[in-house]
Amino acid sequence: MSETRFNIVFDGALMPGVDTTTAKLNLAELFKSDISAIERLFSGRKVALKSNLSQSEAQKYLEALNKSGIDARIEAEPSLQLNLGEVQESPLHHSNSIVDPVSPYAPPRAQVGEALAEYSTLKPFSFEGRIGRLRYLAWTMVLTLAMMPVIGIAFWFSLTWILASNSLAAMIIGGLLGVAIALGFAFVSIQFSVQRLHDVGWSGWLWLLNLVPFVGSIFPLVLICTPGNTGANRYGPPPPPNSTAVKVLSWLWVVLIALVLVGAVAGAFSGIGEELGSSSLSSYESSYESSESTEDTAEEPAVEAAEPAPPSVDYEEEEEQ
Image (cartoon, rainbow, N blue to C red; front, side, top):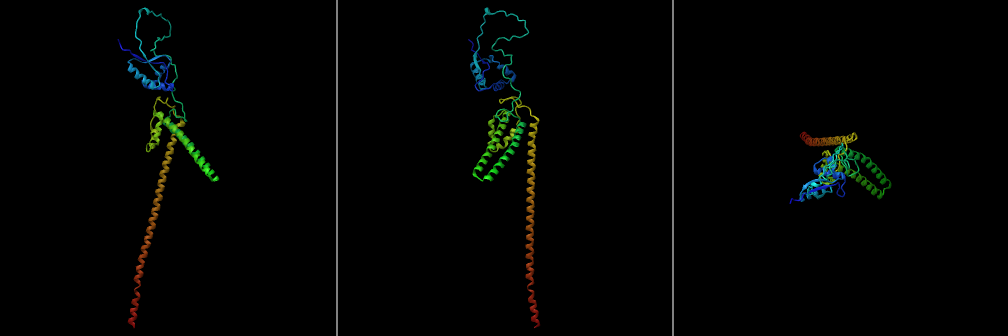
């Protein structure tokens, strides 16, 4: 007696909490297939994903499918029984249409189900979706340009209120307002970073590496330099192509960094020039003071040497006497 073989059967059902798009992407990655081939499996008809398996093999395949969000099941293969009395000649159909055989293992020909979008929908204020490197720089530049005037106005308003009222409540409210604004901009910046991580295929929780010393100073450069996945990944389809505005805003970072570097170099040279000027002036003053002290010490012995002259006059007066 031969061993019973099993099939993995799927009829379009999904595990709880799994959406159709995610299930299709996971199934395509599991079977190393393209999305167009996976679309045909979601027609609602019963399809055998794997056939002629032992019970242990079928259980392994079922666990892998369940982890990917597919609610498949195991069915035993029916035993083949041939009854010659039930064999009938099928009539010929003179029709241009092709009739599919009624078989639970035949792949469906009709494309039924949700079509996968070519590009993902942009969601700036969300932790879902994907953005590329240029769009990440452009959105960050917009956030920076919006943050500077808001912080300036809030600081001016808080300072004016504190100076006018001169109360502790004004200082507390001004401080809380500044903290709230900073947290709001930081929250949006985290959303941009998470979407950039999704584009690479990484988990958004990796953003926490920014809080690690030394690693946090390098990790933003990794987000800027690492290219994203060309096709769809587990976080959805790729982002749409970059517009002209995105390219212009991303290049503003290059201009801003160049201005900062030029300002830093000019400030460094100015500081060095001032330090050299002050050191040369101090050395000149010290040398001038030392020369004056040398001249004073040289004049004193001359005066002292001239003092013994009067005794010679006294000696001449004694000889005259």
